[in-house]
Image (tube, rainbow, N blue to C red):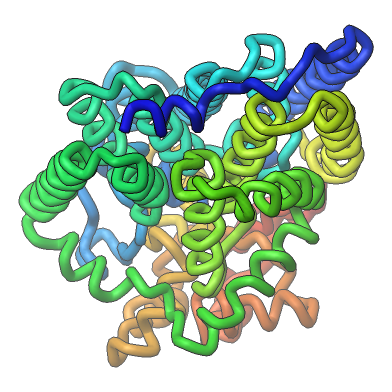
Length: 508
């Protein structure tokens, strides 16, 4: 049995790679690292990537800091409802408790998650007998994907969940697997699931791999330990939320998907990647070449990287069957693709294939620079520094609640968002009668001291967005009849009650 596992990780076929190929790869990675540092410094200054989804996670951390773990779907403080699992925002709440400012703590946590992911990828590749220089280059190439960049500059749980999955695989990747390592892997897979509900492909990969390698007892121990961890996490969530989590999860977990939408998952995934992460296609193409080579081998089920790639693609396709799924969910595909291709280069490729493969990996990394650089110039740089503070300067004096599409704004102002996630409002109102009534009445009664939107309601897209994808029917008419546009700065449009005397409308 151990011989079978050892044969999977040995590399008798490969030879040395030329110094030119090594230098080319490491230079490409160095360029990506430089762009990453520049982009992070810009985005962390002007908060360009604090989307409303990132704002939801930040608001949940602020709620938890104040003692509220999963606010109800509707209550005295407004609307709740989210599919996010707790590990990421709980860690953020801990940083807030320590007195670290809201956005700084969010950026520190997202940066730590990406660093942990890169270190885990390097360690896993080393466990798979990849040379140190190639493992380091591949770990750095992770940043070439738009999804990895997004996880760095915009607080999301994806980076943390992916890192924990990779570290779980790294723990069991060597043939000298022990019960202690199985227990540690179970804990890591459990933590990954507690960060992101769909982060199950790491555990699934390890389980199938152990079974196929002739270690059924260890596979069952891993399954038992991980499922017990899942139950512990779920029980803690239900208990700590006083049962609210069950109601929220029942209402929000599906995200409004159905069988037809799930069938369109592959197309949705490709479309989102084409729009926001085109560099990913290059790495997936390289991974597919390695996968085709591995599929026809006799020990495919003993190929840990190949199993990980297949499991990741399968779960990610299901994720993209849910409406509103964004390119942050593509991070795991990038990670699995690079791990598969690099492990194939080190262990299964011929000397010529390895030489060409290193050049191909470097070229893919360089090519991914183009969309990243374009995004940096056309999206990140034009934002005004500290634009949220400009919004708060206009809305901060009001004693009434602020209705903001991005819930980070009231959090930065020291308050609570009335709506945690506008996308969930339009979803839940389809299933809960009069769910939107308090919101629309609040607008008509001018209960809110300000309304802050992120799209232009005067455009066709803006009208579609607020009537279909966010808030829902009746929202725009209630805003336009009772509020007037007072400020436009970047993607923030501030509306004040019509009866209020406030600074003349202006645009920045």
